[in-house]
Amino acid sequence: MSDTPSDISHDQHAVRRQKLAELRAAGHDPFRASFTPTHFSGDALKLHVDGQDNAVTVAVAGRLVTIRDMGKSQFVKILDQQGQIQLYLKKDVVGDEAYAAFKKLDLGDFIGARGTLFKTKTGEVTVRVEAGGVTLVAKALRPLPEKWHGLADPEQVYRQRYLDLIVNAESRARLMLRPKIVSHIRHFLETRQFIEVETPMLQSVAGGAAARPFTTRHNALGADFLLRISLELYLKRMLVGGYDRVFEIGRNFRNEGISRKHNPEFTMLEVYQAYSDYRGMMVLVRDLLQSLVRDVIRPADGALKIKHAASGQDIEFGGEWREVSYKELICAATGDADWFARSKTEKISGAEKLGLAIDPKWEEFEITNEIFSKQIEPTLIQPTFVTHLPKELCPLAKLTLDDPTTIDVFELVIGGMEVAPAYSEQNDPDVQRAMFDAQAGGDQQSLDHDFLLALEHGMPPAGGMGIGIDRLCILLTGAESIRDVILFPLLRPSGSA
Image (tube, rainbow, N blue to C red; front, side):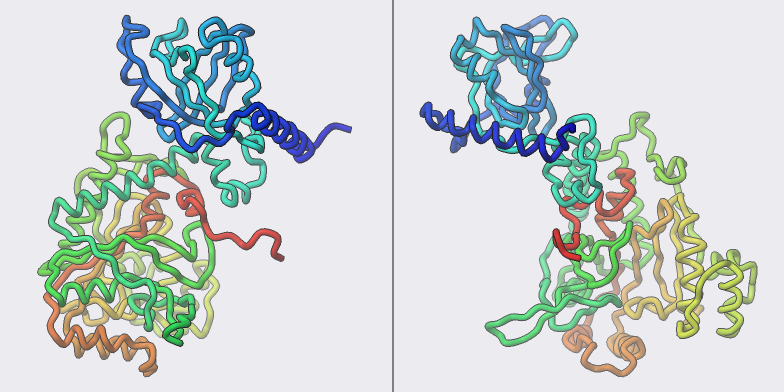
């Protein structure tokens, strides 16, 4: 009977434990306190000049991921945060004892190496390790996943992300790109004089969105608190306080379902600009996304476009973006120019004809929005501003002057999913209270009375916008799921039913 992967892993663990014992018995430290590299791998590779082998000395460190044993020499590769770099060890250079010790190392061990840069016959820039130039930094006691098959269990990819980052170059590149996207967003906004702030995650009222919150207990205060579901209401308090341009990139928490586009813990960018409106936010988000594609994603041909993985279409970010009203899209999808004048019964019948399952308890706007979510949104691949949504969908935006059934908002849809909603923010405290009351159904406990008190002190007109960072990363990196752009997505505890 052949050994199973778990048997092999167990055997290798035992062998590595034995090597660890031998190292310690010989007086070697298998877990050094430090090692000082001079360069990361990518930076070191750039230092080599053609025709000038062995002119530059570097010290590099990383995880041993490839070994090619040539008998009296070794070509190996190590991995650090910038990628891989090749090392060349020759027995008659490093010495018999050091060479013998090196040959006892395992894939996964961390090593440090010092030497000069040269280019091999195959054209690969390599570090020629000098005498005394290799050091075991940290011993790996468990083997890495088999190189060519990676992690066989899809859930293990997320549960043991550290292994996925080692063996899956695509996943590693995608997750390395995410912090670059966030850093660029910060720089973009700061150059436009937006101020970054941090607002409370623990709140007594979960406001700013319609979502089920997580509850936690503060023992010292003897009170229950809620993990925030939105950044909005505290950022608007900043407008009241005199911050004219403000943003936050922070975690939100919603005690709801998990899907390809939803994780209970997610990251949002929210931006508020005094004396602007939803149209000002159109300009801001278009400029932001164009700069992300141009300066972070950097398409090979220099064009402002990326490939949409699901449809295979090129998403064009250049030029003007389509703008279309919510009502126009609904009437086109239903084939009914008078849809919004129809009765609830007629709307249920119309939605069911489109193949949608409708709960009779839903409000009319919910029936209509189900058509938008299921029949329209997935077809909007190119950047599209869907404007003037029904007022019931958000109580925090200004009513449209010429159509009080809608609000001055847009949802930016790209690649078939909502990327950024934006509003002309409601700053009339009496209208805001009335809209909150209507949404809450008279439940005063669910209202954020302090926010309403803040509005009564005066808030300037403003445009506000939210961008889901996780969804943005799905779009820009071509990921299939939100789990692929979050380092450690929420999972059911290991071993639970």
